[in-house]
Length: 471
Image (cartoon, rainbow, N blue to C red):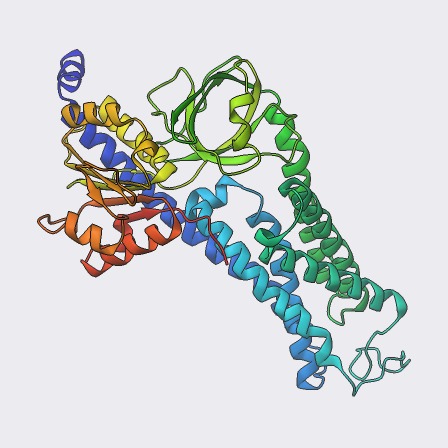
C-alpha cells in the first residue's frame, strides 16, 4: 500500500486522469438525475388531470372540460414554479441554474396564458345558479361571490407577477422592492388560487384532488419560508469578513473575503455565489458574482467586480472587516472531467472571473492540457491580471489572445470584439472539435462564439456557458 501511494504521489498525470474519470462519472450521474427531475416534473403536471379523469363524471361541453383541464395543469405548474425560483441546488445543480431560470420564466408565461384563457372558455351556456338535481355539476357552474372573487384576485395577481417579471429592466425603483413585491404577489396567487380551485372546481371537490392542492400549496409556501427566513438564518451562522477591496483595472475591483470562523466555502472552479455585503442576512439586497479564486485556495474567496449598479458603484466605500454573507455555490460552468484534448476559454470583460478561477485551479494542479484564452475588452485599461496571465503562459501550456474594440496607438494585440470572425481566425489552424469550450461574457459574444463553434462541428455538450439574460 505504501508503494502504491508513493507511485501515485509521483505521478500527477495519473492523479489528473483519475480525477477526470471521477468527474465524468459525477457528470453522467447528474445528467441522469436531471432527466429524472424532468420526468417527475411532467408527471406532477398531469397528475391532477389524471385524477379528474378517474372520477368518471359525466362529460360537459368540450370547452368547459378544456377550461378545467387547462386550469388543473397550469395551476399545478404555477405552484411548481416556486421550486424553480428558489435556488435549490438539487434542481439547478442537475440542469444548471441558468437553464432553471429560463425554464421558470418560459413555463410561467405558458401557464399564465392558459390561466388567463381559462375563465373565458366558460363564457355563456351553462347556468351559474345551483341546481339541486345537478349533483355532478354537469349543467351548472359556480359563480358564487366567494368562488368568483378568489379567482379574480388570483388571476390579477398572476398577471401582475408575470408582467412585472417581463418588464423588470424597465421598472422604476430598487430591485429589492421589486423582489419583495414579487414574493407577496406569489403568496396571493398561491393562496387565493388554491381557495378558488377547491371552492369552484368541479373536480377538485374530490378528496384526492383536494389534498393534492393542499400539499402543493404547502410546498409552495414552504419554499418562500425557506428562501426568505430559513436560508438567511443559516447564512447568519456562516459570516464572512471583507479582507480586501482594491482597484485592479478601469472601474473594476477585486473584492476579497474570508470566513469569520470555520472553513471557506467549497466550490468548483467556474461557479458563482449571491453576495450580500454590509447588510443583514435577511436583506433582499444581494448580487450574483462569479468566484475568481481557485478552489485550491482555502484562505478565502475573491471576486472581480465592475462598477455597473448601485452596489458596485459603492465598492470604494467598503472597509475591510465589513460583514458579508454568501448564498452558494451555484452554477454548472465547470470542467468536471471534460476537455481531455484541450480547453478553449472565451472571456469578455469581467466575464474573465470564472475563467480565472478555472485557470488558477489548472495551474495549482499542474495540468498539462493545451489551453487557449481569448480575452476581450473595450480598452487596455480594462484588462485585469495581465501579469498573472503572462506568468501562466509559462506555468501552463497556455496561449492568451487579447482583443480590444478601442485599441490605443501601438497596440500589439488583436483588435475588435470576440465574435464569429474572431473565433474562426483564432481556431483556424487548430482541431478543437474534441476540446472543451467555456464562454463567459456579454450575451452577444456568447451567441457569436457558440454559433461559430457549432458550425465547426463542436458538439454542444463540449460548449459551456451560463446565460442570465432573458427577454
